[in-house]
Length: 382
Image (cartoon, rainbow, N blue to C red; front, top):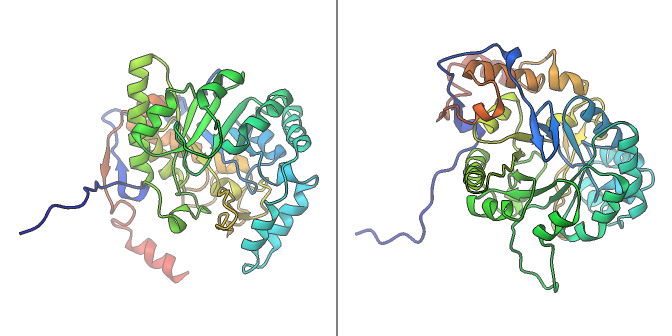
């Protein structure tokens, strides 16, 4: 006779296990609206460039802004630690594979310098960009006044896992409700994967929520710590919290699904799962304008004895504008991301992101392999 189980587990789903169901009515893709609103700011494309040194520097941030999206500058990376960050970026990209992990750990032990924080923000503003900056909770109180004075437009407080309640040895940690009242700009917080944590964070007054723990291409959280929830399920759970909070208060807190998006199909599934926008890293690191020089790496963990993400070679494949808007030169869905989104919206009969949230999605683990034997044979032979 079987005994009682220790704990119950539910099945969760990632992008490769689900598929979007076409609508009964279709619309012209050119008639769709992909606007994303955060606080008082509205962006014409629902894509946020990840706060990673290989993806965003001041020039990239300004260009991305002009193309309609929002790029987040990492204020705890090389841009805020070194006078000439380009030299450090080149060292990381050029380092041998067996030396790069130690180099990345050493690079990010240099102190953050407030003068560079202000300089980088002012550079983005001078170049005509909307400036979003990212810090971890530990440095938020110290750097928030500096970034606001320099003219930042959005503050992202980001760590591997973020909760509204946190236990530590400090007398008074970072309280998001106080932070939101103290800064005159939208505060985005992350990362989160559950209904309850998302709901509690929204109640603090934040303007946006990042969803995802460990799915990024360079992130080692799942391998090192074993922590995370597949992105489709994580997004749906947080979207349920967002909708419940909206119905209760009338205040809408947009979700940004962060990590695990490798192609336009993943972006579309994230939107259908409930995301208002997505945060991209590796795909954008392939842009000619990205500062990583064809490489991408992570440095999210603050622990000095744990790996600070893995460097991967992504190659430089196309200009940023082509990655976002095409025309595509590849068939793997990594270019013309907005075209893919608009086409999917058209096929599903959705003219807005909000309408895409209502589109049906099914469990379909064979969606990428069904009838594709020729493609897989050719891929394996190359």
